[in-house]
Length: 384
Image (tube, rainbow, N blue to C red; front, top):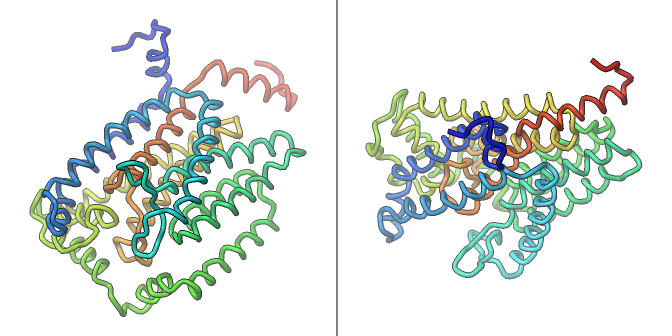
């Protein structure tokens, strides 16, 4: 046990970290590893690989992911901002390169090979984009003469254009909603709300009429016609699981579900462990979002407030999209369940998000006292 009397970096980290956040993230990683045993062997065997191929790779991804999360949690807010700027610059360059030299999968160029690895740069872009936009919004709030909001709008336009070019409508929607929520927190004027809302609606209509795969997915969702094998199989798995599931390893429907280890791992969890288990999983995500928003509400520093709110919203909305697709509440969209689904890029990127959240929500008494003093001076509040 680390003593409160210790004054080293590890002791400071241990006594200032939000241990509830840390426990929630590690718990999700453990659940994801457990579900990889249930969801991935059938997929591996179907494509001619060893039964535990994806399980072993999932375990390998956990090690650097956990190291990244814990390492980033030691950073100060200023270091978080600098790390995010560097990560965003690298990610944007790799996203551009992926359009020309990336690996094409199902008509999309989202992955780029680096040595023996295949990474998805847009996954790493997301947490960095949130933090950088939070900084831009906070700078404008601190000094209105700084065009931080304008720079954030330009940056959003660049990111959205790259995502559409891949194409990746799901990530575009996720990024847009998170960015819009942060802009709203930053005091977006009503004219901007109306304008950006119109642009968003126009973008969805354009995607529907101009992108055949988007048209097909929306039509299947609205009419119930066409190839609906994955979503119907996922629905069957959920129904078969009932309240308490068929038991570990007893799932049958999962064996014919193509993406059971990635996009539809939630359905596998429902079949083997039941609806009650899935409700507990949803509560963990809800806890992360609500605790993050509570931190943001109490935070006096604009950068910390916008960044924490944006990062937890990103995790929450991504999980909502994945679960919504599994429950047939949304059109089919390939999006992982954070820290649960198989995927190296997604696992490491979500741990970067978690590391940023842990770093920005650490309790810093001296900094809080200084901020309260500055707040009193700025608002003419007498000292206590």
